[in-house]
Image 1: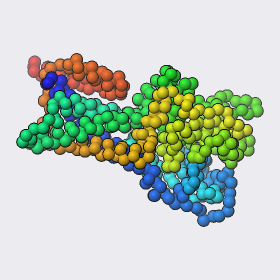
Image 2: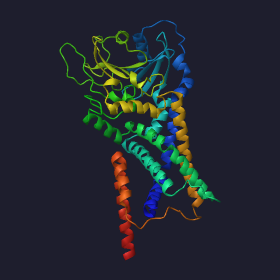
Image 3: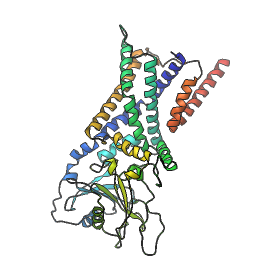
Image 4: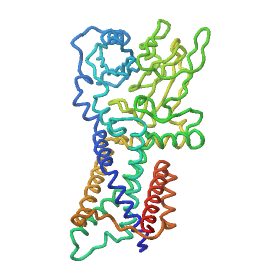
Length: 453
């Protein structure tokens, strides 16, 4: 066994785990919570989702929307979520301060109740999982970096398992050896499924998300032809991954307008007497054979369009569909005419992969078995983390840190190649490696000067 290479991996494995364990536990536990958000919300919010208002008068959906705007002064409707029975219709309402409410309408389009979007179970779990409730670029980078280093931990763990023969049966094994064996065994078993879960979550990330979309744009044969993309964000979650923030076509209007349509902004009420009603739009949607569930996103400007979308990764209870059924359509806001549409078959290989990958990551691609598999992998990952800590304490000497031994040898070619490959596959991880290398160089220079002095 190459002792220098083994010790190098062991040392980096140890320190990486030491620094990111709190983050990994938080991300894994919040990920488990998010796996079951639809089940939790169906029970916790059954009144909003399934029950009726005390008012029995039958309204049109547009009258229901107007009632909601009257009740919640200062708020305007930006999205209408049309779900299958027995779910109620959900309105997304925003004000100029960026506050967001969900308002539920029953079969008569009477108001059943409302929620502050910040405190729904799905949004709490999502915000904890993606940004630790803090948000901001630095925190998002930190979360993504923890995911990247988790992949290094898994791969380096597999290397040490086989090189160190951790699974080899030993007679009269010590407590430390038994702990090490369990840590190595479970870690090895979950390496492939855990890496799959992590990689299918990276399209939502800040740094690698941009990298993926850039690749999709610059290489149409494997990406998404003719679509202008940017990294996905939670506030646009009702639109499929492959067409989020797409450069939507514009509605025609007498006199003409510049083609700069987009999605609704908080507090913007684009409704006017010239726009078709939501009921008319829904009739046109039915005529184009688009079945429920789907979301309607209001135009954001006078030449904007209604966007009607079905997605496999919405983050909205009752709204997800099969990846094959994904479609994004654009309707003229004045005539209600279907202008254009983008479906799953038009995605490139990369777009199709992540259209399947994200629901796999979220645990609803193939129903309950997906949830159970993800749950077991996450629980096993927590076991590996905690057993790693237990293994450290079983070898830790009293009053000492007991870090893995440092190696006097320089970085070997094998170690360098492995880290470069990982750095290329995960650019943010590569940048962090450069930072680590600079820190180690500074420490080495400081020690050298100290010895010389």
